[in-house]
Length: 469
Figure 1: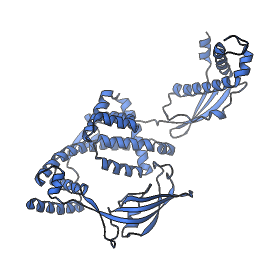
Figure 2: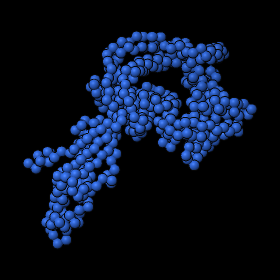
Figure 3: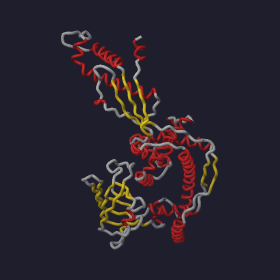
Figure 4: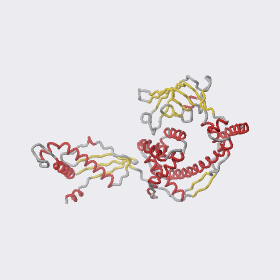
């Protein structure tokens, strides 16, 4: 009967919408429930309490209250808060993001009357999914062209190339590597951060010292050794480093050395390093690898078509603080996705740097996609088994020349294993959607004229080396 009476004592719960994906929960715990919890706490303590002059469990309640009263009340308060919070979220089916932020010390257990408190909690958005059958998807042809082979040969020459110092009177050019001293200073921060002899690559989105600087290439082109430049940049509000997130940052760069990449020659030494006989064997190997990659890229392109359709067809809001809080998780998800696609390590890092410097809009898009795919997984009843996760890990390990158990240890160590599981589930969702999609095969996108001209030059060099051999 006592348990039935306890179950009948209900907290008074009020839930208010205070913004997109954010609610305020106000709770009032009746005095009767407070008394019951206190009585239960004292009763449990009395069974084991030992006070001078009394046998175990026989001490008077008034002495126990005098001796342990403050501790008992604190424990009762924490229990009441925890139970009431859990009840409010579970009974109202709130799909929360993170834990409620409750200042326990600011809440007092009243001597009489009800205990009242409130807190704010972020919740998952309510999503109305679009039609999931018959999504129109374009599948790029996986046929390997001579142009692609030419491009891969040129890329191999670059990978085996050497960073070579420019002459003293030469200025900085696009795609150069600088050795420089960098000083980074955030607004409203008196302290500066100095990084000596660091590498800075001159690209369209350079990462300088600690922060992304989109205008860096424009400012540094033509500069020479010993020149010093200072640029200001506005760091995105989703930037992973909290010290610079959303701030104006001043970056000073003193150039110590300028290097350009000198591609490797297609000579005997080049082929020996690769364990090949000549250029003909090189091109054949490249064709095989490119065929596999084209097939993977076709799968990725089809998945991207699905993602674009879902984003364009699904509208809901996200509060700014959710986007900022989830930036780190977005980075982790992208890292895992690149691993699963078999992207080369150096390219993974390059893409991660771009993502770190991504705009708020891109971060919000990634977060929206996460919620959409999670909703689809629930709707399609998609889950992954431990065996399937191990299968994905083995696949990635093979692509990267690693042992599966070592790859799993690495994912576990850097906190990516849970994200990997989510990515595996998402991939199964995409496969299910593609089974029902309207797929049209199309020609792959052609290389731009500028790139084709560059590769033609490389092709002439290749032929010359082949004839020399």
